[in-house]
Image (cartoon, rainbow, N blue to C red; front, side, top):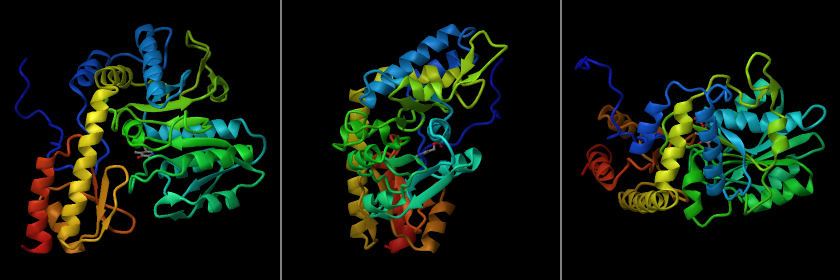
Length: 356
Ligand SMILES: *Cc1c(COP(=O)(O)O)cnc(C)c1O
């Protein structure tokens, strides 16, 4: 049967400037469709996709410089962050707290609430974790320190080796949230990976910059005992235990992760990073030339101070844009945000903001 003209359609990405998702790579789309009816949550029954998941973790480990990676493909960064907190809690006796910079993603608030741990958010300096503030917040009950490699708001990278050294000194576990930044960072000359620091766990999401289909998040651990700390018994499945937070999981996410990584790692991801970086620098200059206050991009996210009325007019014109907590307009340079898209955006910006 032919698909009706009136079949529901997703949005176009033409004017999406503030999302951290992007159209999947063609190979990833195709793999996702093939594996729609598979469940890696039941590996004994769905053995093919379970094997693919091992490959996915191997590839994510390669990207994050972890030679013998442990982990699984989660539903997203939220689940991976919850699991990092949960593992730390389960491996630490007594009441525990988690110390994180205030730039940490809101999923840590969910994690803290769900798991009954105290979340200590400490101030940042220029959008990055402040080492002295983190140190002051750590006490005998701290189970985990979180650092962010590519903050959601500004794309900032925390001083990860220094934070990891502090965590080691205080005998606290260390988690890096690279949910968004993980696929740009291998090319960005930053210290963020398992090779750069003594990191216990990492979040790295294929469904953001990895160009896999939604949902595909990545949870990586240096040691098997971290996964063991997450296992619950599963009496009526063929397999005996399960580490994921969700039960039935997306085989499409797993298969599309492998397909995207095999198509793009490393050269394709490098090219996407270079293009995004050039676009972000260009956009930042163009905004500054129009007299707007611009936050210097570190990873390719541009934040610029645009008056409220103009922001609303741009939204009216169909631009999908969001604001930072401080009120700046935020443009995330994803693969679909091409120079042509940004040129059209600037033309509208001129119409609605600078009035030229
Ligand atoms: C997007 C994001 C998350 C949450 O990931 P979801 O896939 O939306 O659950 C967590 N941390 C960071 C840094 C992110 O950018």
